[in-house]
Image 1 (cartoon, rainbow, N blue to C red):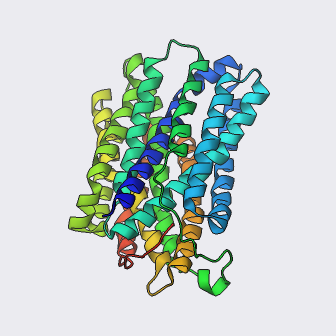
Image 2: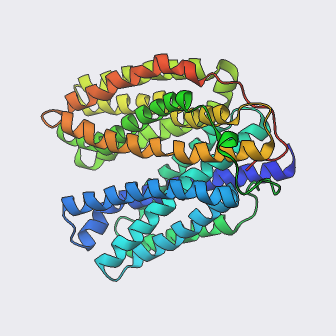
Length: 393
């Protein structure tokens, strides 16, 4: 691989890491922000819903920006907006300013989500081997660092979070992202960008399943440890931290796993492990057993999201296409496919809570059953990789 591709890969890894770092840093500080602005649980929930919906808007906007420029522009724009929004919301002089900055961050979240995955699939096509799992592993490990930073600065004022703005700004202004095809047309016909949406939608179902399970674990896991298995008060974060660490480690090794065993086999084994892990959580007689279940769950579901993006991109790329047309198709699909992320997150947070209103053991039984749908769905992930292109974006 050329030095240009190696620099691009390092830059995109940094983009994923920064996204995880900032998002987890902010979400783990939400109780502090709620206390600072005297927000009720309902008001805070409303702000979070706004952020998720605007992330969807940002993902749609990413498609438009990529069509006119390239995915490198999408990612840089999103990272610059993340930096600006984080600085403002941390230093906001009033609750209204905080809410506006959180809204801007939501749009930026969608831009960066789409931009990082557009860049990642373009690099995967250029390298002609699996890369998406390790890219998503960088996101997860960035989230682990973000959670650690929150713990380390828990006694400091919320304004300290403004320092996070430096990180996305530095990555945005650095060189190395993969440029698009300079000869790409600004507008393509409907026939040129037509993509096989039916198999892509099936891959999207897998994406929704993952984020339902993932959100259930990260949102309701600490509550489960606190209320159901009565863990010590200071250890409820153990529902999330081992889950993230296990997920990150498997993702970092996921490129080799997928290259050796293929995506379908890896996904089927992971789904069975995830179902077993959730059964351990549901039946856990004590909090250490529940923590073990959440840790195994992180390993089991870890590669569903990256392999979903990879499969969707390969379905969009097709074969025998002009590089400019292929780039437009892949970028359009990734931007729209990213919407499954937010659908799954919303369903996971709501469904587990509603079904588990009487008992969270019942609530976690729902994803335990649903994740088994990955076993038959795994077959749609077997898509030939497109031939390496001379230009991608």
